Amino acid sequence: MGRFNLLDEPWISVIIDESGKTKEVSLKKLFQESHLFLDLAGDTKIQDFAIMRILLAVLHTVFSRFNADGEEYGYFQLDERFKPLEDINEEDLDNYIEDLYETWQNLWENKKFPKIICEYLEKWNDRFYLFDGMYPFMQVRKEHVSNVINIEKSKKSKKDTGMTMCRTINRLISESKHKIAIFSPKIDIDKNKLKYSEFVRWLITFQQYSESGEKNVFSKGDTSCGWLMEIGGYYFKSDNLFKTLLINFMIIHHIEQYNKRIQKPCWEYDIEEILNFYVKKNTLNFRIDNLASLYTSWSRAIYNEIDFECFETTDQFLWCIKLNNIKNHGKQLEVMTAWENKKNMPIKLDYSKSIWRSFGVVTSYENLSVFNNRNIIEPAIVHWINKISRVMKEKNEKLNIILCSVGVDYRLDASKSITNEIFDYLNIDNYVFIDTQNNGWIIRINEVIEKTKKIIKKGYESYILDICEIRNIYQNSDTDKRRYINKKTEELYFKIDLSFRRWISSIKYDDFKEQKTSEWLAKLYSIVKDEAENIIKNGTMRDYIGIENEGSNINIVTIFNKFMYFLNNELIYKEDKSGGD
Image (cartoon, rainbow, N blue to C red; front, top):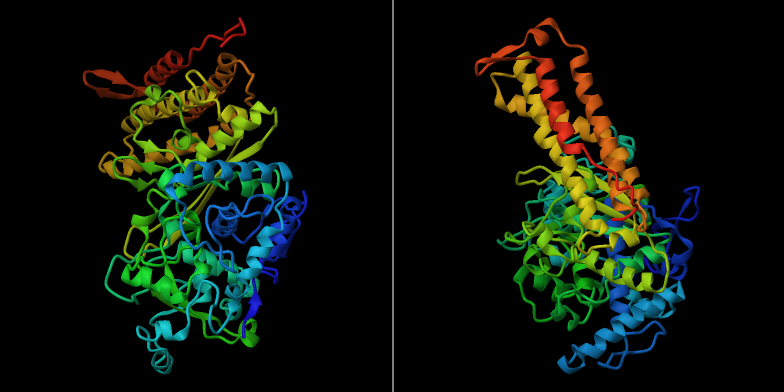
């Protein structure tokens, strides 16, 4: 008998008002009232991202089969559970794509989701039980893991092979047998206890962000961590949860062949079909060739044997077996990450860098010759935002957007243990964000960012290197010297970070570009000059006497003057008083 059904039981945490008050809602409730909620409010941002993709999988599934009025498109037959019996015919594809986009537009104009979503979910009600003898949500049954793990023998011998404690999947603790969490939000006796709602959220997150520590595998092969572990995720936020979901709901894929595929999330398959794909690479039934299946992908076969009645009051653990990774299936399909063009690899986020320093990675250009040395493919979701924003601009409709990045940093060893979670965001006017033509705002902002990086990389780093030479800092260790230089440059980036964010968020589409650019460069000049001056304020006699270098004397005065000469040459910027661009 199934217990704790995700359609009806509250488990998704959402923000309900401007004061930040939260509450938990069921899956059906979320879609019924998403226009009333401000945002997801899970335990961490990576958890919100994983859950958002589950919600998007529902949208992709439903609206690939029904329009905004809940009517079938008629391009394929549906069975009694609204499941398509065939793919789209090639001759119908163009009309189908037009209908999909019309559906998206109608959903946006309706400002809330239609009843067809809950009607669809009810058809698959039996697949959304957290505890179930047949179809536990995103889990397997005991017989599926018993060939790899002898559970009873492991328990008797008190070995934890294949066992993952809930304190491990709970990213607020992240504690394993060999790694104790010092600053845990729970006392030791409660670390392995989760409420039903918490467990669902962390279960979904674990499937997407699992590390590589488990040793049990079904068969030798290319096993790995969760799909989201190795990508830098990008998405957009807006005024409420309905808008946020819809602007990230890329109903038309940028690669045409994927629009032919029927959207099929994991709950529409038998567990055996899923395992056949991940274990045996048998793609006859289950396939990851659509966003719904990618967003609901698995990295582990998870078995939970604890009874529902005592689940919240006893220590919880899972039996986990690693599955084969899906990197070859997700490469072209994924729309929420940037790619290295030559390597065809997703670009990870850098924990030490603010999102604006990678602005060029996530923005597109109409005039690619301006940045013809780019070896990146920006996230496809960016093109989608550009498409819908242009339509809204034509209708004179304002769309508030916030560009968000989310991901993890992990050890570069076999375990791939997560060391940091990464989340950042950037407020930017959506009309500015879509101004991608030659001499548009996107080109101009990226030029300003590159100029800022040049000031720090070419000028300030050279200045710090000269300081090291004069003060004899780490002369016997190039590694320590480089670490020191990086530390000082990151301190400078930190000091300009807030000012740059304020500047970019203040840009309006009709602002004069030269005037706005000069505004930032003047601010940058002031911050960098002050930081350079601060370094020499406490100069010693040795600093002023200096050292011999290639036949000449250098000291803190001469290197400061050299740096200011560089700074003045780079940041002299004439304000355009005519008011034009």
